[in-house]
Image 1: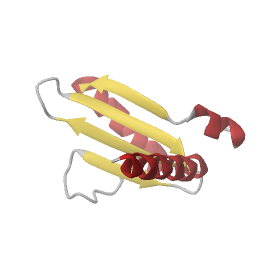
Image 2: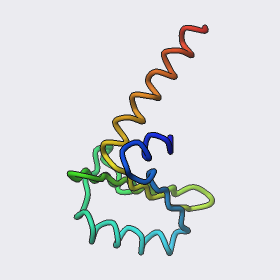
Image 3: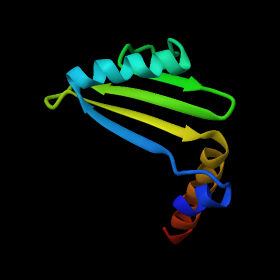
Image 4: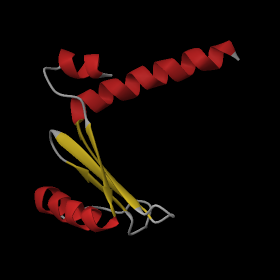
Length: 96
């Protein structure tokens, strides 16, 4: 999907992985940049932020590895990515 980002003059979205301790610090950075965040699933381990230009997602996996994933992406690029993925899924469904 990097070609979509380049077409918009932007960079691809960024995914950040961290261990549990560094994940707490990453959450603080996200909250400082985007605010406290919303919890649409009602869980304390997922945060979503939507801005005018970029959006972010923070997910803490409480499993055995206890890792944290953060994602930051450009909203326009995400719309194009969603459209491309929808087209791919439709094409795959037609093959069934």
